[in-house]
Image (cartoon, rainbow, N blue to C red; front, side):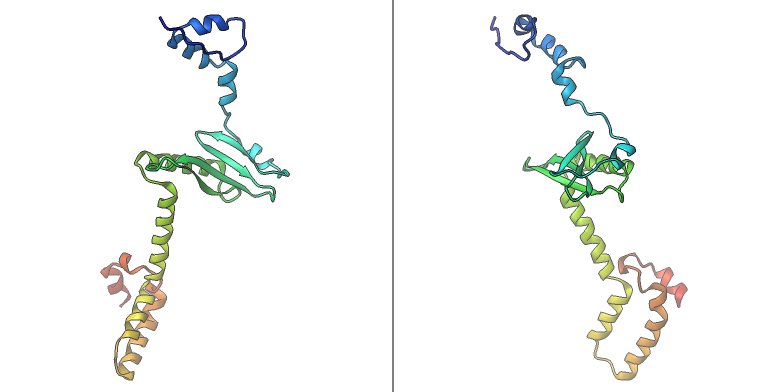
Length: 193
């Protein structure tokens, strides 16, 4: 039999530990009373702890568990973050959820679960967040008012026709001008007319 020389602690029973099988070693290392395991566990944060965090000379972080932590900068900004591995490249990356007063502890934990779900589906959370922002910006740019105005400017109508369209648009823009074109239903246009 091959005996592995694997010294973990300088306890009196280290000889037994070296000669023990793997399941016994794992049971010792994973027991809550073992020094190595105790240092790896993090107790979940509570709201009073987060409120009481003060800035220091250097930035620091406090973990909440399952990858979520609050990062406190020397300027006093508290931001929720998650470290993760990119699903494809396996590179270590950081996903910033948001700052503390805007995102509560419960909201940060909910966001952590969403990030974990994205990672299970092999979707990078940072890329997903950028796509969502771009999608919202595109919807804001493609409102009924902006599309109608752009369409009218590209047409070569007479002055009277443009004046007629502008009168119609003046009536429609306050009611449905802010709506994205792709979410505008025909029934809504008919109700306004």
